[in-house]
Length: 337
Length: 293
Image 1 (cartoon, rainbow over the protein chains, first blue to last red):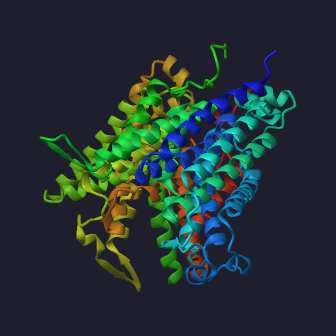
Image 2 (spheres, one colour):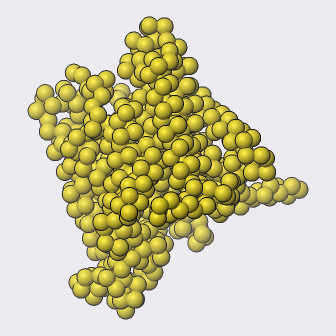
Image 3 (spheres, rainbow over the protein chains, first blue to last red):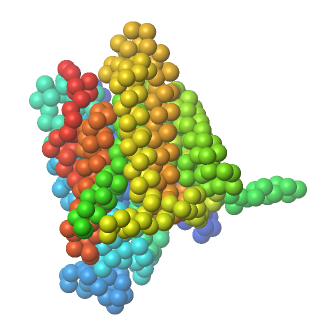
């Protein structure tokens, strides 16, 4: 008999190998290219984190970027030198104002903070199903954003927080990406993951079989928020600034697009979608700057990248609604699904 | 006197939200689509009026309405019709995508920087009536809102096409079997919602005095709140929800201490959250939407 755990592990190892190869090649490339790869890897952690909840429960979330923001602010609160903190964020409570942690524990703390928030929000949220749940997560995003951009004495409001130490190098980003792939695969193979996917396929039948849907959804939501929170901290240590407007609709769209384009019902889909969209965005970003064809040069225009991405997304939705992978997993050999 | 001023504000703001909520609710009713792109209809209306401002006012109004309606119909044909009948999550992502597309198309065409909105500058004039200082705009928007609400009510309740619309909202398959042309009904819903969005774009643009690609997001978000509060799928509920949200936001403005006022939106959306959890069906419960086993 096939063990689901072994299947998930195979997929995870294949994906890990792909990440490792990209990272190994990346270290030989220029600094600019490395930054593009790091950025894509952080997005991959976000998308994988979202996948844990969205893929297994079938409920789309527009709110995870709020958790990303929370992770980023937690990292800022814990790692910015206290002298800078005193002027940037005078409203911080004492234990945060004096903290000066290493980025690694701060990243884990960011994940824990996001998990805690997910637990509090998730208890009521998991009562909802279908579109209502998605709108609920959207409401959550708006609330998070309103707090980030207005609670000036603690988050710097519309301004930016600076002074974060450098931490997210290519090997670090790759390491966290691999850990997230393994985490997502383990959850997927766990009994809880099975029960949640059961509720995704048929809620009534799942309930009749004794599955507590709310409990399983909550578990997935909390785990998924943890990884997204960690990604937030990594993102903060990558950009070295934290600004509220980063954590709103644009990034929400990009990450949702990555998940949907790849196929939101498989781990391989989340990885493939992120890679594809990251690549496409980069091509479009180059085009935005203007294309020089030697004889003629086409002037670039702001917005081209986003418009192109939106068109790609619509095409996928209309012609391949289950995404590039169609919900299949990457496995060795040709086994039936 | 101050209380009267607040009530007037609440009615005015509420009217705007009611129009947003109706535009969103109408589309949800006929195709179970939560239309994120409705905010971009408002944005398009604002830009259309600004671009046409060299023309005489009636022409500006007529042409800009036509532009918004054409845009709505084009979106329905190009993006939503091919997806009709797909699961609600796909439709939701699609409308989110269309909204993002239109916002950035507007960045591409008009640039990201805000443009001034100066159509009918007379609207900003302030009238003094019995001690109340009321901008002319408030009366105009109130008048337009009443007109739009009454027009919509008559259309939906009294005309054949309105009955078809309600039938399709109740049950698309049965409506189709009874000989209703669903394509036409859905297209009509988009046309009506575009006209409602246009009314919002006139008063909202004049209120904030400038145009930007993301200007539709705020009214859209508040429209969501109102639609959900009133009960998704119910038109009277949407209107009621709009006025209620207007009243609540003016109340919050008055009651909240000044340092917490920026968090008004957080409170408002916290409210949506609580409503969704306590009474997911909203104030007005729609039977056609209850899940059947």
